[in-house]
Length: 94
Image 1: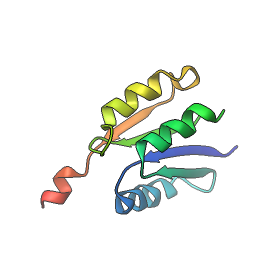
Image 2: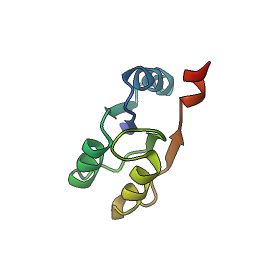
Image 3: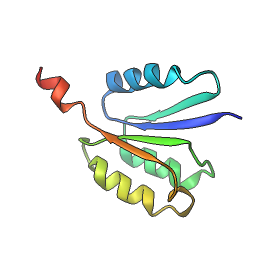
């Protein structure tokens, strides 16, 4: 069974890092990524997919990671899907 991880982050470098990290989970996992939270929400609302995990960047333009998660939680079939919120803001300051 193929498991899907959704990554929502406005920084392509962070998406690549997340894909590399989740790639260690094995060949039964696939990552679908979005650099635009609004496009991600549009996809999640229109598709029937129930991902294994959704990873959301906290700081994004247009809508914040928290607002994105709030919108995800309004999608009935995703209410029990684990969501991880992270930020690379500290890394950028180093």
